[in-house]
Length: 309
Ligand SMILES: *Cc1c(COP(=O)(O)O)cnc(C)c1O
Image: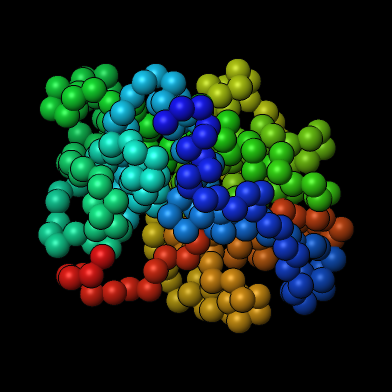
């Protein structure tokens, strides 16, 4: 793996397409919403997970590292994407998973293992301390040397990759919206905006107010300064991370019916629901052109836990 030649090995569809949503619920309020389909970048390394891996993997290569280690929950999109990218470009991958091992592995971890990822586990209290030098030194003693990519890929390199989501867009818009988990995507896209444009990040977590400090910190680490053109919206967590109540499911079904796009439920559906609600309330005022980032594809349908990958 040298330079960025390996990027072509991933068969990526870039730049990702931008489409307008034609929807009465928007035109009635005089708002236009465009979606940037980062979910279509790649089947195996899609969405903002590709954006964040790009410069992390470049840095790993530049450092001459043949093993990458990263962190995530048991259904982490980032874990699967890292495993798939590592398999394609020939880098060994280790996934450090939050919590206990549960066998048989769920579909997400099975897919990571099928891509050659080695899994190891940290109990919840050790996982909370995963950025401590002591915890990382312990992992190095157990697993050998590695290039570390933080949870969600949100290192300064990952944040810089997310800024490219915006530099790809030629269309005029006023407001860009994305979902927020670790905050790396919001940090990057807000930093990439022209003056006068703003960003809203919709927290997928309950109590996401802490993200404001996190996003500003990520911007300072990546670009040396934070910007004041964004905010975190905390009103659309639907009960907490990965919660999917009937009201959200109804919205996803109706959206698929109207637009032929099945929304990813953990992050993207909450953002999209939030955009429509803010348009209804006039918080996103008439005349606004919104760019909504579809940061990843819908999950595969539920399948039996055992057997197939
Ligand atoms: C990981 C993920 C996010 C969260 O992005 P952060 O940069 O961690 O805030 C949003 N959408 C999708 C689809 C994701 O997989």
